[in-house]
Amino acid sequence: MTDMVSEAVAMGGGGTMPARTRVTGAQLPLSLVHEGSTVVVSRVRGGSELRQHLAELGFVEGAEVKVVSRVNGDVIVSVKGATFGIGRDMAKHITTA
Image (cartoon, rainbow, N blue to C red; front, top):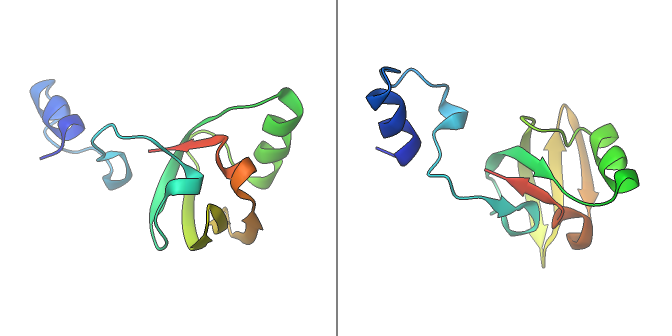
């Protein structure tokens, strides 16, 4: 059992948390997420213009992101029904769980 699931059971959650929240607490920048993985955005860092741009693309807290392909930190992702590529510099600003 992962740490969060154990914690939920201890707090009376009974392990009924949705599958996407069953994580060990590890957080990675999107640029390091493995190809084929689906992750949840936990934080977007950067200046206000960058955060606004990423939000308009669908990178908001709680959004599910599937990494379709990855090469040297550049990623092709699927988020909210759209598929597109982002560079590693932008992907480093998106923290996932």
